[in-house]
Image 1 (cartoon, rainbow, N blue to C red):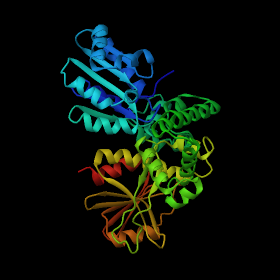
Image 2 (image 1 turned 90 degrees about the horizontal axis):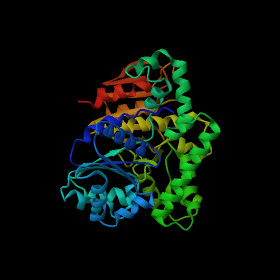
Image 3 (image 1 turned 90 degrees about the vertical axis):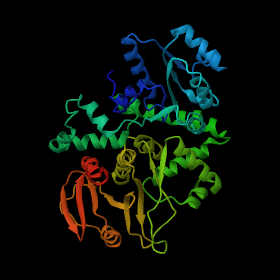
Length: 419
C-alpha cells in the first residue's frame, strides 16, 4: 500500500545533520512512527548505522533503567557512532532529563525521538532540553497532502491549477476530507465501515491510554462526554457553565479537561478579539478540533455530515493555524454583544485582517453587516470571505475585500503577512 507523502519529512531530513536531538511530536497515530521508519530506511541505504527502539515494547523499555544502560545497549548494537531512533519516548518518566543527561555526555550519537502529545513530555522537553533539541509537531494529513495522494502526485507542483480546472473533483475531494478527516490509516483504508472502525480505535486509544493514564480518571466516560459536547460546539462559542451542567462536573474540572485536550493535540481554543469590552465579547472562547474526522466521530457524524458549514469553518481554521506558525500571527474571532460576528481575526501587531467563511459558491457577492461593522470600526487594509470556488474583489473605504476560494487562502495570507 502506498504511503502519503508528508511535507514535514524534508524539514526533518535536514535536521538529521544537526547535533541537537530531533523531537517529533503530535497526536496518537498521526504518522510519527512511519516518518521515523522512512528516515531509518534512508540512512541504512546510505550505509549509516541505526538503532530503532520503541518504548511500547517491554524488551526495549528494559534498557532505559539508566543512561549508562541505554548507552551500553546502543554501543552493543551499532558501535561508537550512528543514529538512534526512540519511539514513544513519553513512556519514559522524566524523558527530558534522561535525554539531557545523555546529550551532555557528548557521545557521537544522533538521537531522533518521537512521542504522543502528553503534557509531562512537552513540559519536560521544553525545560530540560533547552538549546539541545528541535521539536517538529506533526499534524494529521492536510487536505493538500490528501489530494496529492488521491491524484497519484500528478499535480504535486500545480495543485492550485488542478483546483481551478477540476472544480467537481475538487468539491468531491473536499467533501470526502470533511467527512473522514486526515488520520493516515483512515485515508489509506478504502471501505467506509473499516474507516469507522479505525477512527473508533484511535479515539478509544486516546481516551483509554493517554487521558485515563495522564489524569488517573476514575470515570473516563465524563471526559468522553465532554469531548462529544465540544464536537457539537465546534466553531461556536463555548459556555463553561453550560458544559459543566451538561457533563455533570465542576467548572474547575471542565477547565482542566479543556487544557488537557489542547495539550494533547485534540482541540484548540481561540479567544475573542476586542478593544471595546462594553460592546464586544472578551472572554468566551470558540473550540476547533485538530482533526475533522475525530470531531465527526465524537459528534456521531463520521462519514455522514449533516451540516457542512461549521465543519468547513473548522477546516479553514486548520489551514490558518498552519499558516500562523509560518507567518507568526494570532487567530481570534470577533463578536459584538448584539451578535455581529466575524469567524476569524488574524492579528500581527497592528495588522488586523478579518476572515469570514461560507460553505457555498457565491454568485452575487454582498458584504455582510458584521464585516461592514468591523471594517468601519477597525479600518483594516484587507479582508477576506472564503468560499468554495468564487472569486471577486471590491473595496470599502481603504479596505480591499477579497472573495476567494479556500485553496487561495494561503496566497492571501502570504500577501498580507509575508513581509
